[in-house]
Image (tube, rainbow, N blue to C red; front, side, top):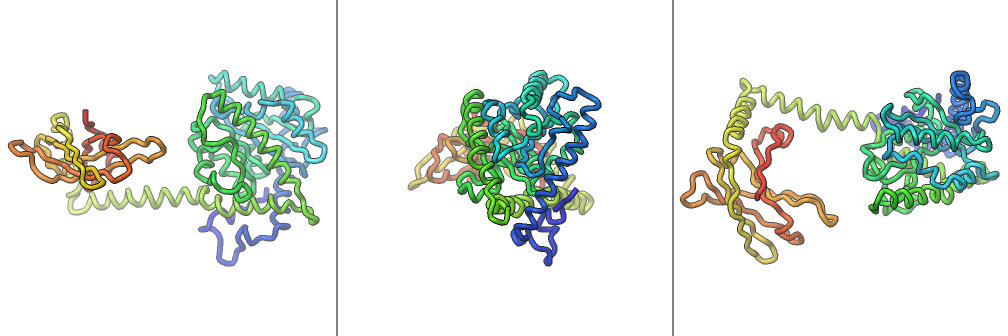
Length: 422
């Protein structure tokens, strides 16, 4: 199978190697066509096995009327879980059939996947899909591939032109299968969820995007979202994806399509790749953890010993901490907040007093650290902590809280305790 994995990320490309943006359109299109042909040939091998071991009618795995390597190929393969909405594509079956069977601009659909053994609804989704794909008039245009596994997944992400992703937003944790098509030149048609929501700028003009967006970020009930998203999906395929794939110049190349692939491979592949992920883990997790371990172990584990003593003190005194009155005064166009706190026998530096505001009305979550400004008269280990709320957000958005604090501790990873203002 062909591969462009040598150019997966900017870290892997040599100075003399052309980037995806510099490769001639003819070379890129020839590569994509070869990938599609390899997938069609593999599907033929897979279907030969499938028809020997199962129901030859199920899934339209008919070797006499199999796929065409010159037709726009759409892939949908994943676990058939409820929130992934595999049946979104089947919301208007006749409309989908017209799309697949168009005489001048045909589409072929490859579907694969499994349901959890205890997921009855997931199994129902597979039955719905196989019933639709098994219709005799769809032979050569739609196939359901059984026994979905990593090998089949590898071939699909390497050879499809378009990868569909239709989860119920915001339930998609990531959606990694869509990332895997990037390096091979596949384009994504996806709900704005998981990595796709991070990758695509919704305000960007459609012609500049590295793929297509289904639906929007608007909320609604399950049924409302299903109706809106299914209409959007079929509309995107009919009005944007299919016309662009078959919009060929005199040289036979769909240049707008190739340019969109260039954008996808150049912009997204370096960002959403295993290499990038590995370096993120190394730079942001493993190396900081190694440095922290070295610091805690130095000088006879002085810092580690100090952390143990700090943690023991927090554990002993935590239930005796108390937040008192909160006083707010106006200073020009800002609000000054003074909070009374009693820390039992903990030193003031052993905790942090904060103002916390949850995200609301489009505003982001916000945390303001208050400073110890003075002792409370007549109190034992009682202090006033003060801070200023920035202009533009009311004090009523904020709640006082106390959390453990030590310069060398990782909070909240190493200590999740929080004392909230009542």
